[in-house]
Image (cartoon, rainbow, N blue to C red; front, side, top):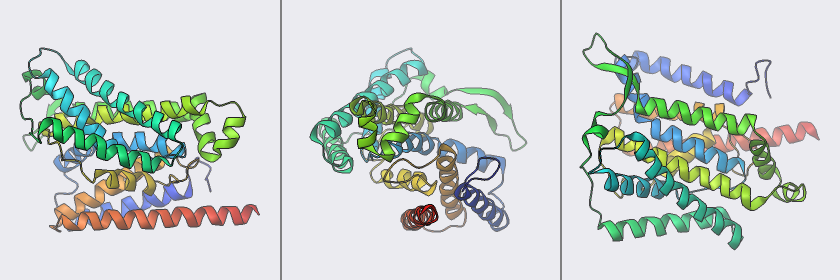
Length: 326
C-alpha cells in the first residue's frame, strides 16, 4: 500500500517506530540526542549503510550474498598493505579496495551462474574460502600502520562545536551520500534497475524477454563486491585498524537491516528508502542498548529477533496483498 507521497505503509511504520524509540531514548539517556552521539552514530554505521545498499540490489535480483564480510576484509587488508608506504590519496585507496571487491564479486557471479545452485550455498562457500585464504596468507596478523594522509582523513565544512570537538562532512558521511545516490539512480532511474526488479520477480520470464541473466548477475554481484571494497576503506578510516576476523557474523546485521526495510528475500520487492530506514532503526536500537548499559551479548539476540519479526511482517503483507488481488 502506497500513500499519496509515494511512501509505502511498511516504510511509514518503520519511520514511526524510529520516532517512538528515539523519543524514549531521549528521555532514558541524556546522551542520545547530543550532537556528538548523533555524529558518531552516522560515522560508525557508514559501513553498514554501504553494505546494505549492495545487499539490497542482490536481494531484489532474487539472489543473496553472504560472503561480503570476507570481501570487505580482504579488500581492506590488501588496500592497507599496498598504501602503507605511499604518498597517495583516498582515490587510490578506493581504487585498490574497490577493485579487489569487484573482482571477488564477479567470481561469485560466475559461480552462481555456471553452477546453477542457490546463491546462498555459493556465497556461504566463498565466505569460508575467502576467509580461510586470508587467514592462511596473513597468519591472522592485524594491521595498524597507515600513511599520514590516511590518518588525517577528510573533513569538509569543519567547525568546532560548544563541546570542543570538531564536526563536519567526514569521509564516511561523504561516501554514504555518494553510495546512496548511486544506488538510488541505478534502481530507480535506469533500465538495468528495472531489469533487476524483473529478474527478481520472475527469472524465467525475464530470460524469455531477452534479459541477459549472466550480465545482470555479473552486475549485481559485482556491485556487491564493489560496495564491500568501498566499505573496507570507510571502516579503515573509522577504526584505523584491520583485523582479519573482525567482521565474522556481520552478514547477519546487514541482512537484518535490509530485510527489516521490507526487501523480500525471494526477490522483486523492496525499496532503497525502506533499506535506509531499516539501517537507521537497527543503528538506533544498538546505540540505545549501549547507552542504557545493556550487555553487548543481547545485541545479537535483538538482531535475530528483528529478522524474524521483519520477515514475518513482509510475508504476511505479501499474502494479504495477494489475497486482495485474488
